[in-house]
Amino acid sequence: MLDVVAVSAGYEAKTNVISDVSVRVGDGEIVTVLGPNGAGKSTLMRVIMGMLSPGSGEVRLGGKPLTGLSTRQIVRRGIALCPERRHLFPAMTVQDNLRLGAYSRPERTGVRQDMDRLTEMFPVLGKKRRLAAGVLSGGEQQMLTIARALMGRPKLLLLDEPSLGLAPILVETVAREIKSINADGLSVLLVEQNAHIALDIAARAYVLEGGRVVLEGSAAELTGDDKVRAAYLGLA
Ligand SMILES: Nc1ncnc2c1ncn2[C@@H]1O[C@H](COP(=O)(O)OP(=O)(O)OP(=O)(O)O)[C@@H](O)[C@H]1O
Ligand SMILES: [Mg+2]
Image (tube, rainbow, N blue to C red):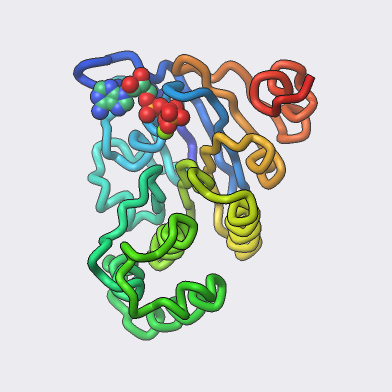
């Protein structure tokens, strides 16, 4: 599905943010990237979405390079990003925010069916569909962000810190929804500060530190790793 191959990238003010990063997401797989603040996790997501061009390396989807494509074209190829800070349109209704998620799809019937399916999956969004997105609680907005990304029918969903600022119970709800979306065949690349949740739902994981992959393996292997246990799981 997704292959990030030896990618290095950065910003004008800071040129070496990620270095030689290789990450793979298989078909129908949930893969997580763990790492401290500033490790370059969101930067990696931006490179995948074509929002930032890599200095070197390549990103491929289904074997085809995405290099040089615009974010819009990458979205059309089937990748959706739920960014860290919820980029909703607060003055627009829940319903209209969801419709926007389907902007690249020409067929209207499928869009309406997906709207129904997603408001079933997140009942609170159905109940509040005529309210402005800005009046929803933080957790509800997070669900709307995920639902909106799914309206585009992506093959691969990139989630940047979906549990940020959520109450523990909502973290579990979001985790459950991610798993159920995945059971429908969607591949997921998940960046999470909450390593417990991330390693619980992911099949494989990467640890990114100082812009480099310092560890990778199955979620089970990483859960058993002493360094991961101490640094990310708060276990001795
Ligand atoms: N637009 C930018 N211009 C310059 N430097 C940036 C920019 N965005 C991020 N950086 C720097 O790149 C580094 C990595 O940032 P990034 O947002 O990718 O980290 P992160 O792993 O997502 O962190 P967090 O867990 O806090 O979200 C940081 O040092 C950050 O200051
Ligand atoms: Mg980030």
